[in-house]
Length: 258
Image 1 (cartoon, rainbow, N blue to C red):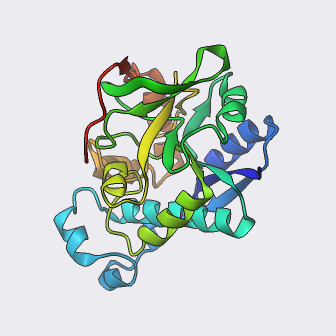
Image 2 (image 1 turned 180 degrees about the horizontal axis):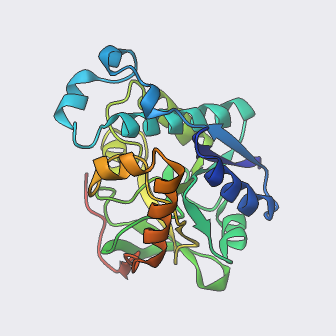
């Protein structure tokens, strides 16, 4: 089985590239950098060339130029995986830190998740619900659990996908009509079969501020990330703030229908 890791990184973020290269070079996996599409370079006056204008207008608080660029960047990762002929890919964003368990967990999880699921190795925020039924148990107390629902804020920071799903996502996401982590939408549209996750998570947040452009105070964050000093300030603040727990529960409930 051919496996490769693809991490997405902006050319103007060399510190993140160095951070990811340091982490990945310690692992026994092939990996490749995907040069991210930069939201600053998108010509929003020619929106129809790369996105669905009606959807962008409807979801303008989410489909910012940076979020559109993020979706296009994930599609570039899918294209690279297809061109390389991989059977399974791990797609990473460049603000994900690996915990000590990461390599062993990935080694076990590759090929063991459901064929058409997206298998998350990272999500953000609390209150996620996963199902005990039909869990795949891994060594070290880890397991692969199906999400009760694919809807909700999970993120696209780190996820495993197999080749057929890569192809469907690649064909579906362009022109951009939703965010890269709209797993509920992708499941509803039949692009993926469901969402699962490795639990406990083998990843954590790296000390970088998100550059996507939604969330709290996006304009201030975008302004700060335009300078090295601002980037250092955001990293310092994020490092010293109490992190939001990546909470979840595992239940005997049944999955929600789409």
